[in-house]
Amino acid sequence: MFNFKDTAFVSRRFGIGLIVGLILQIGLNLLGQVNMVQAAPDYTNVAPGSIFFSQTGHNLGGAFKNYWDSHGGLAQFGYPLTEQISEISSEDKKPYTVQYFERARFELHPENAGTAYEVLLGLLGSIVAPKVERAPTSATPPDGIYFEGTGHSLGGVFRKYWEAHGGLPIYGYPLTEPYQEKNPDDGKIYFVQYFERNRFELHPENAGTDNEVLLGLLGSQIARQRGLVPPLPEPARPLPNAVTQPTPFSTMGEIKGTALEQIIHSPILTKDESYRIYLPPNYKNSGQRYPVLYMLHGYSGSNTEWIGYKLFDVADQMISSGQIAPLIIVLPTGEQEYWVDHADGGLQWGAYVAKDITGFTDANFRTIPDRLHRAIGGHSMGGHGSLQIALNYSSIFSIVGAHSPTFRTKEQAPDYFGDMAYYQAHDPVSLALNSQTAYSLRIWVDIGEEDTGWLPRATDFHNALESRGISHFWNVFPGNHDAIYWTGHLPDYLKFYSGSFSLPR
Image (cartoon, rainbow, N blue to C red):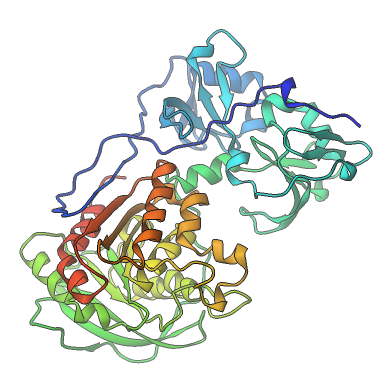
């Protein structure tokens, strides 16, 4: 058996941090602590002699073109998805010029100019590969080799492809054994194996051809998650049916806009649910379209809870006085189900909000129906819900706020959070440590300094984002976990949401 030692090749492990640029000021009058870092891509560094790809609308030139041409070109890396941009490495905190391709990310290392390592491939496989145990050497196939450094083997058609198309410098070491996985692009099941820089996919329908093994589109996947390219469109889905006509109702005070209540039938929940909506002043006559804020209630509340905190009244006053731009506000009902898609096929409350509620709103009101103009927020249970929904449905929302979120540990979580793996896929703190979609979101978190029961895990969430260089506002205000706190900070919340809608993306 052949043991390929780490000393044979030094594998550079640059993690990918968020692009650090200008700190955006949106007129927030904050009383607490605020951390915000915003991406500032540089599209000016296009080398002479570059070529333009009309398929994606981007250029390729300089050292990146030389590397692309000499290491397999289109078949190996796919089309360019961005221009050359600057990204901060989360490992050494230094900026590097990078360019995303469908199957790779090129990184320019001028300190290696004149050597074979002036351009290096990003470790995209390491970013998305599942965390698995080392495999025993006894599991190595007869025609395989075992890599002691990562504890995995390589054999069969995957080994043949690996050796024929560049081997270690191009793909890195194997990070898993071959296993079955659902493809995120076409939804089909394939045998795959992850490497430090990519994912191999076995396509038996192409047996005997050069396409029997295909590379995963990891460059596209990560660029999409980080907001560098548009998200995939949502597949067509049945929309909820209105069960009742929209009925006006009274808010806490007199408003110039309109407050409506309606019952709809959810195809996802297969039952009727009530929701409430605020339409800004002059909605009926303006003819214009508006961004939408979806606000989730707490564990003991309903879709009237934010109305009781005067959300509609304060929004109406701030719109009328010109403090914020007009927007639509939607208040769904989530019962006491933590706004989560229940494990083992239970009720899908996250999907209900992300698909049924947004779909009905877009179909029946003059919204701007894209993720850049959808925000989701909530308090307490709703703060947990808003974050996990935004992180798991980032193609729907681009802006998220969590106000006094209650992040339950696995021991505190209800049974419908499932096993540990399912819990971690729906726990915002775990997602902050592992999810790549967080890079594409504009995030706000606030909590009262006297809210001692929930402050530690909220701080864990903040620290997880900060450790990865992920943009967010972090606010610790005076106050506790109560109505006085949330009502008092409504202007801060509304300025954040409205200001985020107006930012250039």
